[in-house]
Image 1 (spheres, rainbow, N blue to C red):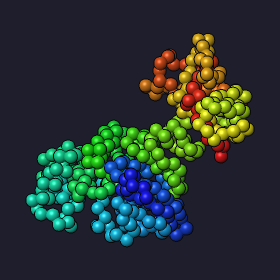
Image 2 (image 1 turned 30 degrees about the vertical axis):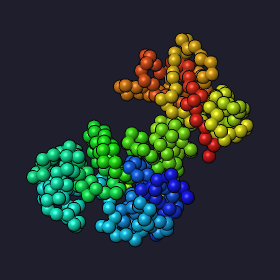
Image 3 (image 1 turned 135 degrees about the vertical axis):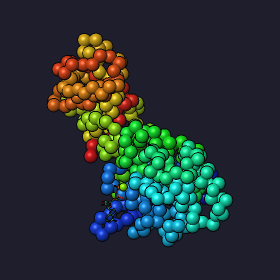
Length: 366
Ligand SMILES: Nc1ncnc2c1ncn2[C@@H]1O[C@H](COP(=O)(O)OP(=O)(O)O)[C@@H](O)[C@H]1O
Ligand SMILES: [Mg+2]
């Protein structure tokens, strides 16, 4: 018996969901710890919503079990699962007041009028909109309506808060603001939250844990930094940010480093995190932000770093940074995103590119 480990708040055990011939979620095992915010991240159609709807009780698993606080809930009706839900079209009732909207979740519970009033007031304070009880939804801005939807979800003091792309309908600035709002509220309440998104930045910035999904299958789960810095396969690396994939073969391994001959013939060094041996075909993953580009004439190579020559093929100015495509030999190009520490390079200019072995991550060639 493991006695020191806390019971997870939510557990998926061998969860599978089929719609006719479509397998929407495949044999999923996954735990969510109490008080954490977990993001289901993946492209459209990968099964995120289906997984969430099974927790909510809006879909029934074809196989497997879902537990909340250790209790199997497969057969528990929706209204007996103590869950708060916020979906993309958060749809407040337009003809009801804010008070009625927020109080809605308490209607079928055994709560006195006095208690309802207190809880609604408190929920509106939590989302930093105190005193709007008497207004109508149309009198509030989009962001404020979103916060009312949050108040409605938390007023019942749910065991788990379920959010399905709640921010995707908002414009970029408001989304950023609401992202922080959700994050703060979740931490303040300490409520276990499952947050669905296809936006990697949203996932990286908010989550205690990310579950990356593809075609109904779990690809990787972990802390944002682990998933970002140590993706286990091509898909995860590609989905979470601007990755360069450099194909090569392991030529040498020692305790600290793996030497890889890449397509250009250059040998690049990666930190040895284990799992690779001589002549293994590999892909080296380097984030575009990890390369440093220098004018060729001014470049002084640093011992132990990887460096190679290239020519600026394309560039786009993005305000705080510049995105370059740099041509190496052998038709190989790399994507480099450079914070403008130096000047902007011209198209055709020769540059030296440097990257630390620490930022060269290896995965097996697929
Ligand atoms: N009610 C349904 N009937 C048939 N197929 C469905 C249904 N709901 C979802 N699917 C299919 O299941 C897969 C996963 O869908 P979904 O969970 O909505 O993905 P996501 O939320 O990641 O975009 C998709 O192939 C989708 O077409
Ligand atoms: Mg969805």
